[in-house]
Length: 359
Image (tube, rainbow, N blue to C red; front, side, top):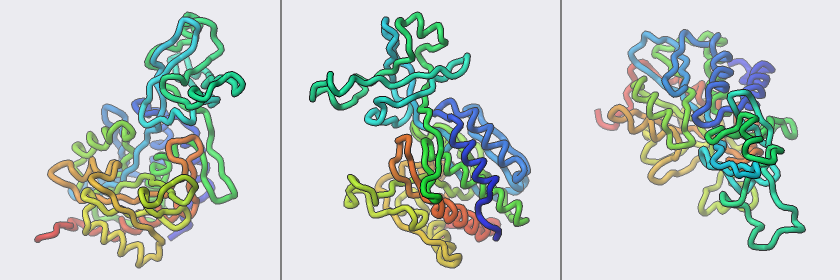
């Protein structure tokens, strides 16, 4: 197999991560993703809410899905005061604790309006007011009245994203907002590229799915699973790197960046498919870690697994530091190994392969 990543890959990753793709408003990011994978697929389709699916061998009756989600957490304009300050509602699991003093982009029909999360100076605060909450964080876009805010094109319902951009730390750590989970979209796109460049002929239809609205309840995956009706689904998402301070390994498990992708055990994960992935990792010398889920994985794996009378599904996760902040961080070698594991697993699956426990 050729080298996993190349310069064009990382150029795409930078462009893709720097493009806003908030939940429910993923279109711009989806266009970037689709433009990249076009040379590596036979056809594509989209659904009414913006999920994009690239297809290899579309005429095949046996369908294998590799999937990630495209949306990032964000905010909505909720209330504009008469003095021009803006209060918010979450769009997904946005963290109010990191908001103070952050710069943001308010997305309007006229374009981007710049604003900041205001926060009182330390000299003026009392102890009880020190902690940010949804009741006290607010945006300031430099206006003195509600009317002035509205003249900029800002209204209730406008979506807001942090403006932080992607960077590389110490040559081996990707860092930025929305690695959860556009890094997954990047990885499945790279699998498509490798299959094309290595001239691999698949005996089944491969559906490369970049789903919307995961952050508000796996909604995009629910919709597209029912449309595709896959025979197998391999989902990639992120999980917590628990090797940083302030994380309890007894509660969160022992997972660390640099030690490979994480394979999850749990009710939604089909064990025969999981065992195939584990065997592939061992045979191809791909390092991996293990995690246990309880009732649900909390990822699109659940949506695929319980669709269409049950679809054999598995989850391959990327260890991520500082999830749902603007400084999400992962190791480059984990990205490469996750791509390799998905790629090699795809080559292992046979046409009409059954994963049933009892035959």
